[in-house]
Amino acid sequence: MKQSNHVDTTVHQYDALNYVGTDPDLRDRTQSHRLHEPGLMISTKDPITGRDIEDVEGHPYHVDGDLVIYFENEQTRQEFLDMPLDHPVHLPDNPDEDWVAEG
Image (cartoon, rainbow, N blue to C red; front, side):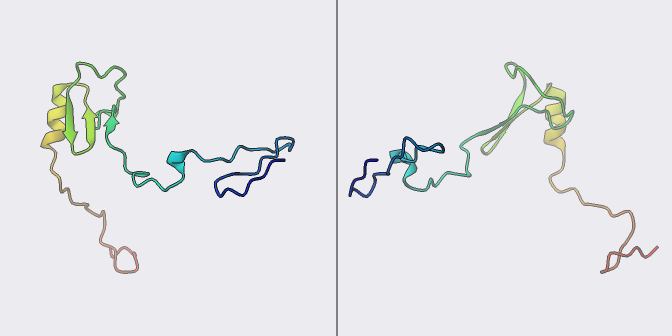
């Protein structure tokens, strides 16, 4: 067993059955500020038909901020673009504050 007084050095017990290397890389010594913030997301599932697009080359797409959405054809792309942004939710009945249907 080798031990050092240096702060970043880990004591290694190579003969232990449950040995795990625990020295962090230089890039892993501080918290990433982009941990849950991907630079670009790509969706290969057509949002209109729900079908997955295997080979995206030649398929129409739409870029919305950091999201690229691929479509099966130009018709489904246009249908997606024509969809209203605010579509209200209609309740089948009118429940009161306790969520009991009035009718």
